[in-house]
Length: 78
Image (tube, rainbow, N blue to C red; front, side, top):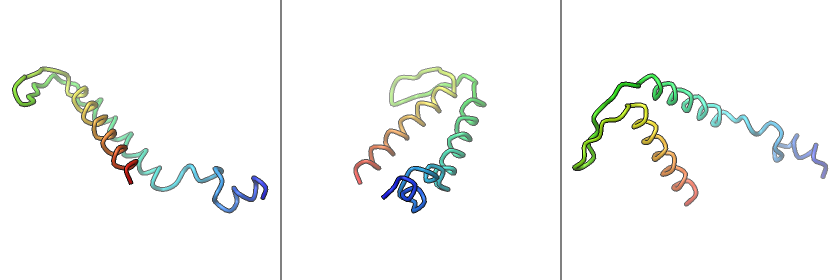
């Protein structure tokens, strides 16, 4: 089977990259980044006992990374 036939049948890597779910995921990611970088003020964050003052964008980015890692871990486990 030629590489051209694989791409036309949908099993190749031709146009399969931009699926609707990937486009939606990219849109949510861009909106998340916009939200994170629009919130730049300093906030006090308390996790159990210590209280830390840090920019809100840094706390949001940290939570997004932790959420992404947890999602990737659960996705890989399936």
